[in-house]
Length: 251
Image (cartoon, rainbow, N blue to C red; front, top):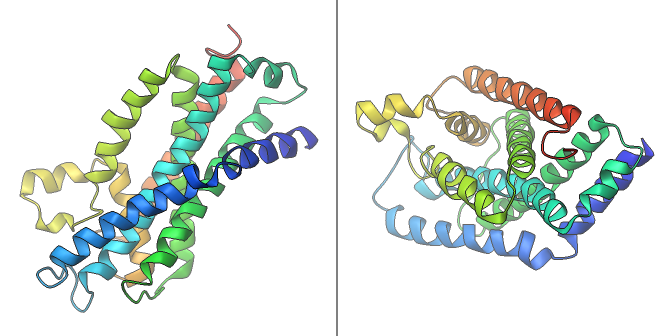
């Protein structure tokens, strides 16, 4: 496991050394969403009975920050290594594909959770937050960040230039997160969009995470947990298969 710990430490240090860019900037950006939306809608919207709009909004923003930064960490690291050519040093090292996978996955999870924690603590300046079900909150934070870390690894392996990676982020990741109930309950949507939201896996991540705070959700949290766990297993298996075959890495 020495190789795993070495690569994991290298991946954590990679984003830690540029903390202003990788952690502080995403926290500030997310807080701007919180500041604007809570100021405009706090007095006009009540999504759940007894839950203020700002308190409703904070868990969604925390999860959005976790997902986007978990994806950004693994995908940017891989594409940089491929373009600069230093990926060869990892491929020649006595590392199994499982160690390679776990190092990138866990480093991305650490960054995602670190940014999410920063957003959550900053959100306390705007509203009071209760943890009705802490274990549900922890489960959805870990499993969802693992899902997007896998997506980041897959995108980083597939993409051959930054433009392709930006395409995945702008046309897949951002729409999925923004249309997943971060700023609203899907019950406020027209029937068509409400039905369509049930096919968006990010909706279950945010709804389940929010359930951990407020104890209420748009769908059964067990159903959300099943969807997130299924995505974790499927994407982990796909990522491992790509690494084992050396797809776009060894050829």
